[in-house]
Picture 1 (tube, rainbow, N blue to C red):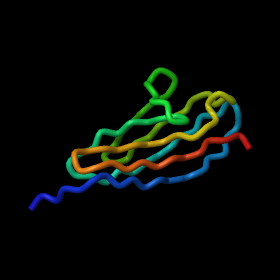
Picture 2 (picture 1 turned 180 degrees about the horizontal axis):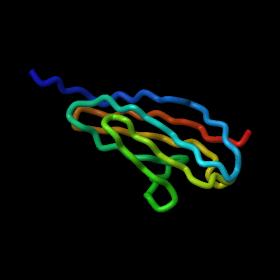
Picture 3 (picture 1 turned 30 degrees about the vertical axis):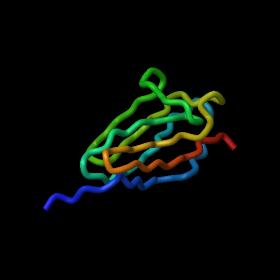
Picture 4 (picture 1 turned 135 degrees about the vertical axis):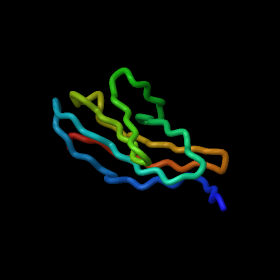
Length: 96
């Protein structure tokens, strides 16, 4: 029997402290069947791939933030959705 379920997201970290010029990664582990659509947001605004690197290996979704500066600090949200529902988790990236 095929198990179908709404996505559930596990976060590796809810808060990441980084310095300017560093590279950091936000990681979400997504459990879902059928496979979900995963989207990334910064402060509620959808991210495209122009200033960030989005990667997926199995159920591990990684958002790489290169060359962190003050404009990249904020709340990053990983949102997964399928036909059964959605889940989202937010990680704060800060220089504080």
